[in-house]
Image (cartoon, rainbow, N blue to C red; front, side):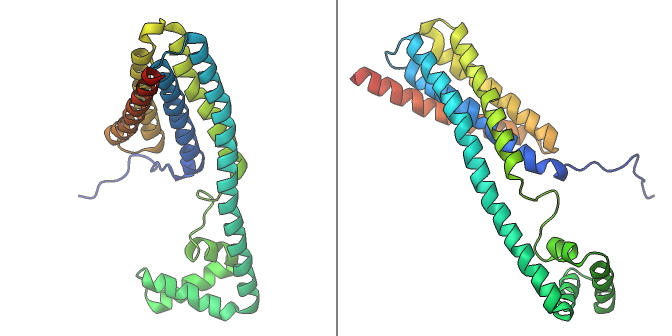
Length: 233
């Protein structure tokens, strides 16, 4: 017996643009800020110095994430625009060759030659650039580069992630800062992995383990470096 859907299918591709930047920003905010705090706290630095380090990490990291995301995603956007411009020119000068190219794409995907050509003709009649952008170049509205969105999302989520280790540091006695910040950072990272997985519709356990493992590795290395150089000084 064929089972019918109980409701419309739910997909998450429309979230991929901002979700990637959000997870990257929050993850980096937690790890980098907590790692710096743990590394400095493992040395002989007093609490005021640790606080100053954390605040500097939050501000500098947010600005760096915004600039880095904007520049990198702008490069992607420039490439997409250049490809679309070339495709527009080819559609204008060589429409028959472009029709054949689109037809062969559909043939390779499993359609018969006649049907593939009919589909290509219909799509090119409706919106030839959109058809070639999607099926030849692999571009769609869900994956299209959006530099400003990526920059703002990364900056805001970085700052949001960095706030948590700072608050834990402020509430902890000096002698417990290393362990309290490290432990809470791992908890925050696990929660971030879970939220990202649920938002993106991906497996929960895999996301939590992945983000927690790399966070623990970063925290352990920076704490070791801070203790080593702090002791040497």
